Amino acid sequence: MRDDVAFDSVDVAILRILQSDGRIANKDLAAAVGVAPSTCLDRVARLRRAGVITGYLAEVDAASMGRTVDALLAVQVQPHSRGVVDPFVAHVLALPETRAVHHVTGVDDFIVHVSCGSTRDLQRLVLDEFTTRPEVGRVQTHLIFGSWRGGPLLPYPS
Amino acid sequence: MRDDVAFDSVDVAILRILQSDGRIANKDLAAAVGVAPSTCLDRVARLRRAGVITGYLAEVDAASMGRTVDALLAVQVQPHSRGVVDPFVAHVLALPETRAVHHVTGVDDFIVHVSCGSTRDLQRLVLDEFTTRPEVGRVQTHLIFGSWRGGPLLPYPS
DNA sequence: TGTGAAATGCCCGGCCC
DNA sequence: GGGCCGGGCATTTCACA
Image 1 (cartoon, rainbow over the protein chains, first blue to last red):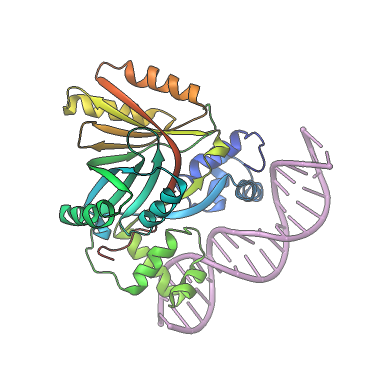
Image 2: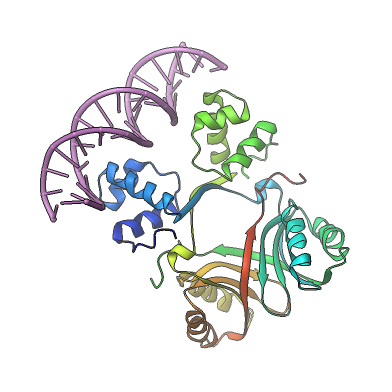
């Protein structure tokens, strides 16, 4: 990012491991990538400072949080101007059900990923928080049967 | 998950903080939620064992990895049977550009989030890895202008 | 919840490429 | 000279009472 330096094989190995285990001990990470612990610590700190690693976070099981119904909402917004788009995004991000918002090209303007407790909660969410808003046109609800995460993000082309 | 025990305010506070800083020192986490470090450590281990916390991971800046073009691909698959769906998902998950796959209801069967290096790479990806496959029907490409993540996942209803 | 031993993180030096 | 390696101390973790 700030440092547009190329990554060597050690950096790539570090990035791969840290994306699947963000809490691995530096000692173990160093052993896994084949450098001394002090060197490994320096590499990780460098990647962090350069903005390549943006943060660390715990992943939480949605079902444990009472979220059994996931959906993608395809939303049309009118007019498609900044004065309307920015408040809409802010409103959606403030909802406790919102997992992610994507501003996209195509017939629909936004794809919103939400997690609800039931289909009834989902219905309430769509009716009370989306279709009631004046800037919101059509809302198409796509229930999610299942989701999978891709592999770690590595330098492109791989 | 396995332990369907209710969360108290300390658990919720822990889960909120860990979802934005997965590498916080146990000592600091304990101070932030207002319990002794030993107690806090036990709480976190309990949440981990119960399957509420599923893991920890580092977040990586997509631009640093050379991914400047994100898109959502809406894919129709025929026939919509397990014998076709499972290999399709496996194929998509094996692509280095794939960030996430959602199996959804509606006109389209899958929404695939991909990160490419350029629009040219995106074109290649769609043509070589999706539309060439016999089970894949229409593929609609929605470029992503911008994305936002929702807040931490907390017990529902909040 | 508080304490203590073991382990870890991390700053420091010198060294080699 | 920039990055890599090993030593030493402060900090943290984690089992125990």
